[in-house]
Image (cartoon, rainbow, N blue to C red; front, side):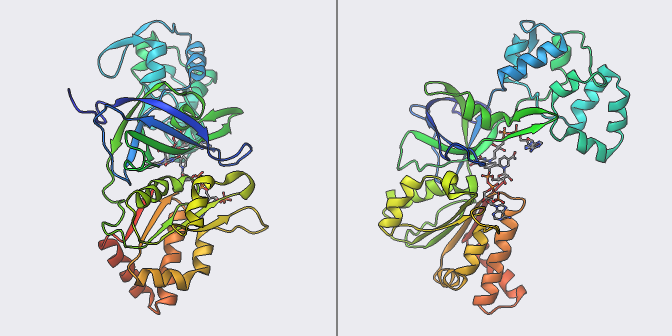
Length: 375
Ligand SMILES: Cc1cc2nc3c(=O)[nH]c(=O)nc-3n(C[C@H](O)[C@H](O)[C@H](O)COP(=O)(O)OP(=O)(O)OC[C@H]3O[C@@H](n4cnc5c(N)ncnc54)[C@H](O)[C@@H]3O)c2cc1C
Ligand SMILES: NC(=O)c1ccc[n+]([C@@H]2O[C@H](COP(=O)([O-])OP(=O)(O)OC[C@H]3O[C@@H](n4cnc5c(N)ncnc54)[C@H](OP(=O)(O)O)[C@@H]3O)[C@@H](O)[C@H]2O)c1
């Protein structure tokens, strides 16, 4: 049998889905366990899992109705097979992201003056596609299109793409299983509440026993040190904590003597703690040092990098003792700010110029002592 891969994903059984953050959290986060038993799939701590989601059936139904199409009409699937329109839109086609390509194809049928103007203006296009989907096009009289049949509509759609998630488990701690820590993406735009396809698929629509198509995505650039004596510093605010759960499970499974220091951050202590019941015994037994930045529990923001700054001298000592530094989470702001702080720690406490600090970090990177998994 062909091994499971991105092209041939494995239908993994959902073992459980549970909330990580508490009700009312501004960072609704869930934990999902899948079984890989019998799949032949293996992963290494630090890898990611690709998940192939299904679109929200309510959105699919609303879209079919707005388009005036027949849900049961047979349409081609991306793999060449045939399915009903409803099945195809639920499992195989992207109906939530608007791009220049699919808008142009839509407008070839709609002939909308409004869309034509938007398509000719880069800034207007960027503004228009943010927070809109196919249903918005179909329900706005100025952009609506009358497709000849269901196949003509799916012909303008791209494929539903898999999403990657940092694996939040160690294969040695939970053989035959894989866990994820997922932030549910929810927002309101154009007066309609919307959900990220894959994160709300897992948060709202899967239950134990269901099968979800997954594949392992190797990440050779996010690996624990080979030597278990090496101290590690992990910086993972929000869902950035995901791979570090795998890391601490692995270090415990390996009986690795190296010190472990986790910098975590989330808005409020009351609602946004993650894996506190698992972390507490590790902290008590001295296996994990924990620094938490509750960003909104006081008048001014406190972020992980503020705690790192405060502990600058100690971090510098850890670096000089060969520590490896890992960062995971938001690529846009957090990763840049944390890197700036690391450089400032190296330059202040290591008494180095800006250029020398940059060279120090570059050497750490080359020695695989500075690794990032940011998105
Ligand atoms: C290597 C890697 C590892 C990752 N690991 C994790 C992880 O461990 N945990 C985790 O939770 N995520 C992780 N992610 C992110 C994850 O892959 C998905 O991107 C995320 O879950 C969102 O996917 P979605 O399908 O739910 O949302 P999508 O359907 O893809 O929707 C997201 C889109 O919605 C739109 N949008 C979002 N908010 C708004 C708003 N307020 N207004 C208007 N439009 C908006 C934007 O266009 C945005 O791009 C990782 C990503 C990578 C690349
Ligand atoms: N592609 C996608 O659609 C998608 C989906 C989900 C997540 N993401 C990315 O993944 C990131 C992680 O999301 P998340 O919800 O788990 O957590 P998050 O938004 O990163 O928030 C986690 C903590 O980090 C704080 N924070 C904000 N800005 C920071 C900065 N510059 N430096 C350090 N800490 C900072 C937050 O504080 P405050 O909130 O109080 O400011 C919060 O306490 C998101 O920011 C987003 O970029 C992308």
